[in-house]
Image 1 (cartoon, rainbow, N blue to C red):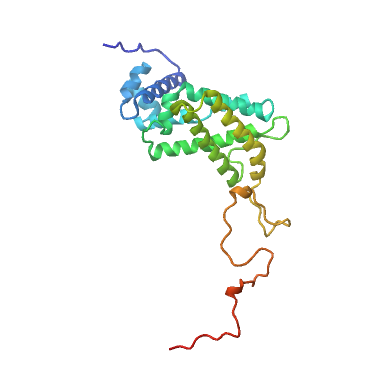
Image 2 (tube, rainbow, N blue to C red):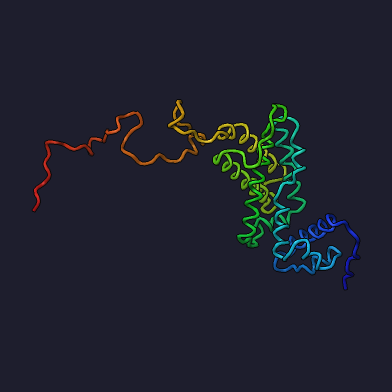
Length: 264
């Protein structure tokens, strides 16, 4: 029979962190359905009422577990405030791979890579964390020696944030290739994620940073921040750019010499 952990006296914040740490481990090992709040309390050395006091229901506890696994802590950004862009990105990718390796099983469960269903509540938490990650990437891109404050949360055009959102999904997939499939080594995953992010921040982000200009107010004409490969298809039209608006292909032109056939 396993002995119950001896209860300790903790400060409120430390007690909450202890409960959350035990929940991360248990949910990662056995999944949401197989873990009870009583087991989390026993592992943390507290009474079950304290779990409910700090986190509410079991589902709310699990959502906090997912949130802590997919959200970048604010203090991590201190690692990316020095050096050139490549060095800042290298530090950020190193932290990310260290973090997912340290909590591989619960992280894979949280993002649904282990086959466990996520559900809409978990998907919403991950979506919110993705937006916070985009804000963190924009701060990594900000040159601390260039002057000016870092970009605030929510900064960037819709096109820019869409591109960075795609990178966040790409980074998760790269980590899964390393942790689950073994198709990439740690070094290969690091190179893939770091070089892709440097290219994205140095070449793509400056193009997308200002968003689409309004052709009616831009004297230089319309801009294309997505570039030719990502440009959406042009709406179907018989008119050609730079040609008269009433131009029509020869087969579509009305011939005044032709009369409509008589009605029967």
